[in-house]
Image (tube, rainbow, N blue to C red; front, side, top):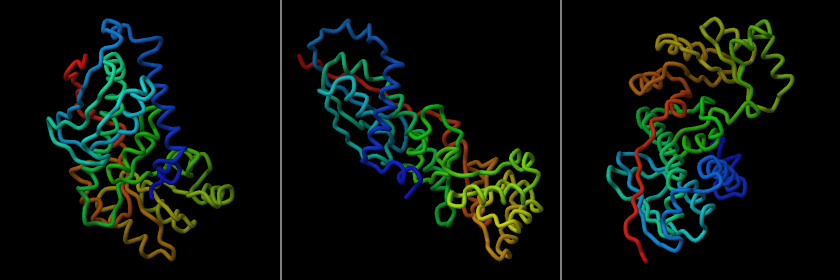
Length: 294
């Protein structure tokens, strides 16, 4: 179970409220006081439409799409031909939609925005997960997310087979270089962290092997290896194994599809990849009105 699904179990009221709130905000942004162009169509005109994907992708965001149409017009019906998390191919029809032509066109962009963004994150994540297949290492996201879509993107990472590093600042203590500097050292900042949050997860970022040694000696249970080279990662894994209480080691910084497997093979436990949610290359979807029904 991921951090996201522990906090927002799929199908739960918490998950449904999250989707509802995000869709409501998006519709206010896009539709506002009303869709002026849709008024060019007869109010009683019914139509069918389909959503087509134009490239290989992992489908993600169906609940957001459904909620978009529900909030605009609860009489619109959707028939999904694929499941959430399923891999799809170029020019594949993934959904049929039936209802008021005005409602279909008003909702189109908002629904596709969610679908293209969340499918992009899920697809990128699956690429990284596939790249390290056969190793015990895990792919994680970061907090480098699109504002107001943090939790949706965290969800998309899980659909792609990844794990959540942390949901937000409230979720975990992550001590970085500026925290260490302000607290005057690794030992001092860890001591403070253990004192104020003995239950919440605590992770500390280190920039070299000396800092790793200091963190392990101070009782660190989870360590982020920031921009370590492959050689440094191997040395860090060996050093960690010699510790009386080995920590979870996570690699971060400069991770690409080209080097992620080599990093996983060093023996680190986790790899966090900011580009999963930060460098989003939207998946190409289109909606086409098919046949006016009256």
